[in-house]
Amino acid sequence: MKPIPPMSPSPRLRTPWTAIATILMLPIAGACGDTTGPGDGADPVTQLPRALTADEQAVIARSTGFGMELMARSVAEDDRPNIVLSPLSASMALGMTMNGAVGPTFDAMRATLGFDGLTQEQINSGYQSLIELLTALDPEVDVRLGNAVWANDGVPFHTDFFDTVREAFDAAVETRDFADASTLDAINAWADQATNGMIERVLNELDPDLVLLLMNAVAFDASWTERFDPDDTRSAEFRRADGSTVAVDMMQKEGVELPLGSGDGWTAVEIPYGGGAYAMVVVVPWQDDVRPLVAEWDAADWAGLKAALTVQELDLLRLPRFTVAHDAFLNPVLEAMGMGIAFGSEADFSGLSPIGAGLCIDFVRQKSFIEVDEAGTRAAAVTTVGIGPTSFTGLIADRPFFFALHERLSGTLLFTGVIGDPGVEDSGPAEGSGRCH
Image 1 (cartoon, rainbow, N blue to C red):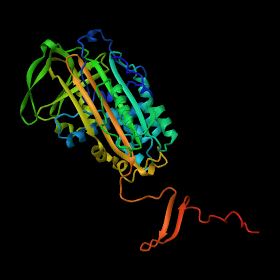
Image 2: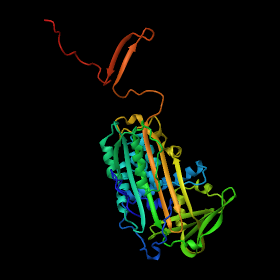
Image 3: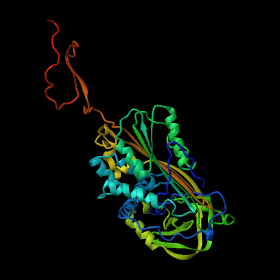
Image 4: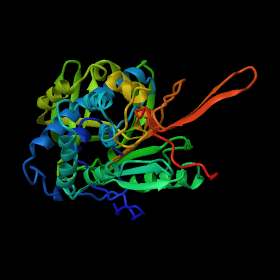
């Protein structure tokens, strides 16, 4: 895949640190177009180039639980036939946002993301160093990660917040007028470039009342280590959960050695890409619907599934070709996972702006794409976190204000004033003197 063209500011895409933890965890993948690939010529990737730091190990382990719960709750609440999520993209976008959260809001976001007990510095360090570590883990697999922050012009922000997301998340930061139509065009153009054209548009409109957008993009493009032969692809029936069937193009392999395993109600196979550092795990239920299984899974179940996989010679492997685009608002799922305070009037984002006590997360939206064929997999996801003013009925006089004491029926003004510091009880003596001598 060609590098993403530079832009101003540059997205500076990197290989994501949670690739092993999340690319294997969910089938967030798509297809390559040519028929050449690494095959047996790819150098196997059997170990990391260095040992993981304690912060890296903690961030990877904790984020796995977040990813499994995000998928489980989404499957339970979303009845659309196909669901494609990137836990990595959601974690990154919310991880950036968390740097502006304070007090109970920070605690709730940290717990929801699975980082309870870790400091913000440890979390940021884990993101940062692992991004650097895995940039070129497998030369046969193209994994890209971009972060961007878009600030509404005229809204005050703490410069140290922007400095932090630049340093820890390699994020591009740009200030724009959200009421200007060109801003929406620029945001969508960034997503298009960051996903190599797989996701061309993330927002159809931009609310000018929003103050900040935090975005993460993940792009994945890889060939199978051993590709499927297109000549072996045949039309076959795929049985839906309700028992009905649909004809699909079914890829197949015979006599291939792959990790295979089974558990309580399922059978799973792991299909590697490139040098083998990345792979797709496909889990097929013994019953007609996989949703009841996934809706109950957590990090321990995922660990048990991986432990059950052993290399075996498979008589037959069949996998349908598929292409899916998915669009999801994650607010309800994240609220149910414990982040509700961040979406309401009690949110405290004073770490990102002086007006942070009046801000909350307006929406968390993720658009994703997957394409799988005989050659391999292409996938992309963009998560957008919108920060806006709290939506509640009332008023918080937490900044300088004007007051007027009046008689309502006649309209007579009795007193007016401006309060710039309620803590100062006495304004002091008047300055000046009379002019008549």
